[in-house]
Image (cartoon, rainbow, N blue to C red; front, side):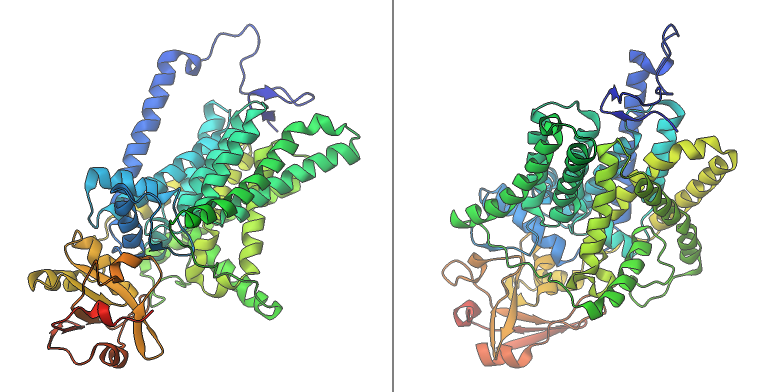
Length: 553
């Protein structure tokens, strides 16, 4: 077993670091400045290649109204509405994570459909990069390379269709792992200084303001591990409590981050900013645990690219080629499980704080998912998306030395990585997909229909892909009346003093995206239309009046 270190200092009593040069030996090549610049160049080239690769992959999935909503919110912030006054957001605000990223992309790209895949590619690359650096730790040489290859290999090739949707589509929890991984990287590399708990607390608070899932992937795991460490030192080892000031500070800081994540959105709302609806997740009944475990198992297959059941694919069918690559990804899932198992066995005697936190985060995230109502369908796998990068990092950190010690394991690793690259190439060979409702957008623009109403999945995406020249606002049915849909929408859109609307779009649904066909409620609210169009599967009713004056709610 190799040396165990905390930050850049050896732990007293631990074995010598096999990667450190012995006293009197010449400096190794990678310690020279020229080699460091060369290594930095390799990392930069890898990052740029990854962004291009994952941008291409992200474009194989059409943009929908979820991603469009975040793009429109970022555009509003970019034009001065920093608090998003008047906005009703979804149950995840993304306010301190993806929205700033979308703003930066829009500064360069403007408002268009490509904002979503560009941001998705950057986010996934950041997660991949942080996971690789965290897995590497302070090791160098072959050990560092093995750690990075194991970690990156597990994550590098998302499963086509469903995997791309989770990792390279609209914002939905993956971006939250960026600041959380950054917090763990700080813990892994920094010395024990008084300001480190403060910095980590701020980073976790930033993540938690954007996404309450941070409580289960960052805040609670760090607090639990610190409590175990302090308790073990005080009770089992009889150490004075003051000697544990660092872990006490980290634990208290994590709890403070949780409190801040609760208070900041309330303060923004009190200042007239955005409103977030109540969380939709609740505890499930005991009778649902068996079903939830089954869904969680399928979700883990999907995250690892090994969903051979096709549970996350519309229609549940995989091609023969996809099935072959999918079976190959079972090796990656097995490596993750083995890494988690090794980390669990070493938990109580583990000297690396980060390894303990990563393991605890995986367990807490999975348990909370199984016990919640979110685990009703494999499509909700996004709720445990952090398990893949955390598990991949654990696999790299736990298993690299073992792989280097066994020749056949090294050969197997290279063969599997080659297969994963082949799977990634196959995914990249798929054609790009147009944004959702592209036919509708083109028709409305060509017929000078600039502002109207429809269901959620037919609204924001049209507004985004038209560059805001065609604005379709989402509505819903309340009883027998049409009312604004207060989800990823702006109150100003429905104010007849500031805006107008003169058409309504009906659309059939698909297995993945519900349609909107509330014809009876539309006629009851607005009366008979002046004329109508039919284009493809869409039906468009047009009035000669401002429909916003008739909206309820």
